[in-house]
Image 1 (cartoon, one colour):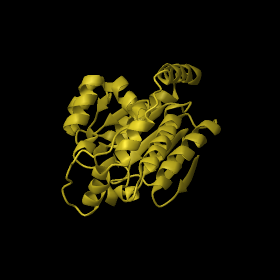
Image 2 (spheres, helix red, strand yellow):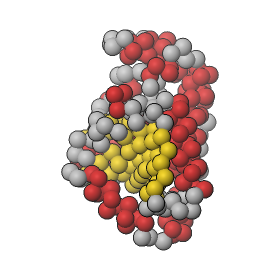
Image 3 (cartoon, one colour):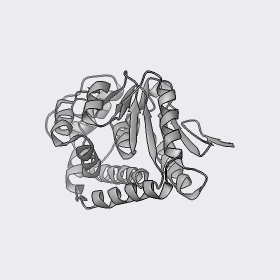
Image 4 (cartoon, one colour):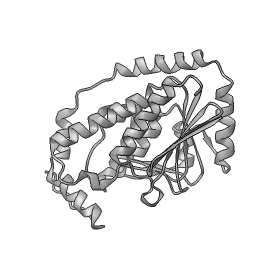
Length: 259
């Protein structure tokens, strides 16, 4: 039995116990709007409230990107206080995704960067096509920062050394490196077939055992909570960030002054 819901930018459907969530802005590489973030949160609520749903799958439309960050146009005229509110909101949404009671699978095709990498990191299992690229290139694009909760999720998944390298160099990691690092567990030419095989396996496993594993990990990770409001406020309230947003939207190269 299938039931579908759709907006312009995010599509959800349920079929055979699987909740499919598709980020649907292919012309913008599925860059996330506030509405899409809220739609993702609502999908998490739906996954936990509907007992017929056993697995949740996240995808990006179009084949060019899973999610290529947050829509930059939403950052115009940001203040430090706005930045703290934004990062807090993202942390809550990603925390909600991580806390979903059922297995969450990220099926990654193309670019998975910035906010997209955060979304993928909050899933339980990640698989990708060979063309996938991963990273947080904000040191050369916007000059903003990650919240410590998102940073911590990356450190737990791929280690501090690689996380630091990706953030300081602003480079992108290819699928082979993502597989070696453990960020993804499979690289497949036929990504749809691999996703179907994986979801089929999860559907056949004991729900309570999978929930216990997820909930125990969530509690372990909750111990790493850090107050980072002062860091986030300084970055999002900086002249560098404001200038980089304008430069990005006008397709110019940002200039960094450290203030």
